[in-house]
Image (cartoon, rainbow, N blue to C red):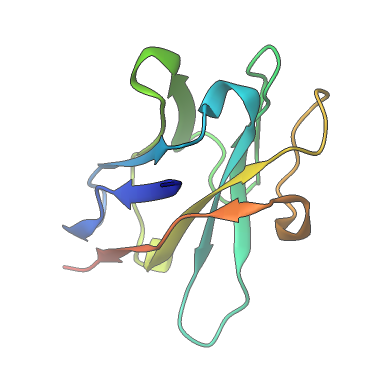
Length: 126
């Protein structure tokens, strides 16, 4: 059965760190571009970062550049999002998604992604 599981969310103080994991069964993640998105209450879903399916090149939106790092471990069939220097405004539900749109540079637009995991809540609060 195909499944994408997102884990690692939680409550953290400002300035803290969390690592989110996106693990798949029934999908071989190295064959997909993988992206992380988030959605805060009352806001639209926002693409944060992606890793391409060929060469594992990465992209980040400005709001997380320098603080978040996306990586993949093909042996574990997992993609990670390391989040450092977390801010109050990072509070949201975080999702990962898989895309088959091509082997070039990845993008963080949600309509390019085909399969979505369930969200995990990240709350940054003092």
